[in-house]
Image (cartoon, rainbow, N blue to C red; front, side, top):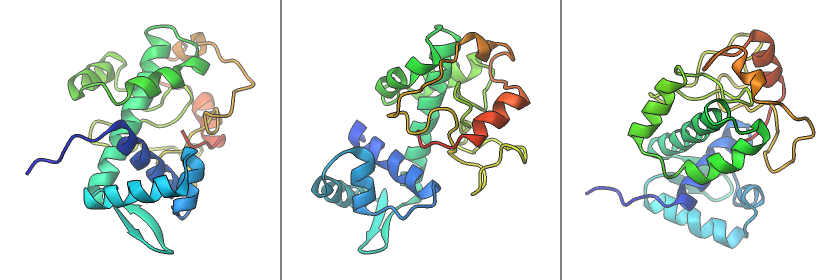
Length: 200
């Protein structure tokens, strides 16, 4: 029996569970409610739904963990978001500080075919305009050099803007992205992006 289509809210929950876990934090209902800005009751209801769909497991006092299927959805959403950010910055010329909100609106809507075409048009990039890694088409994280490698191995470390809800104090023009060409980053830029850990 095919799985029902996943709502934007379900995808957002899966992404945030994945990111909290990748940060080394126990994914409690309270932590998830705080991250998403919703009530603990709303999170509890959604966690039950995720569990019923086979996307997450929840053990009281141990937290929420994604199943393999849940992790795959989370990584796909992260990939969509970061490819869209790069496409909006490099191809359409949006300022780096403006791409997050646009990508947030589009990440749930793009097809796998469009995702593949964006990936190809950008030269199969490994990092978004903020210096964050982009999972490849097989949902594997790019290999990181020792200077770039996050503490817990390669994964969703985010560099330039922290939690994206926090406004940036430093403007970065899209032109600085294009200096190294589509899908490539200078080692200085990549290293500086990796040093500034965030949770996109």
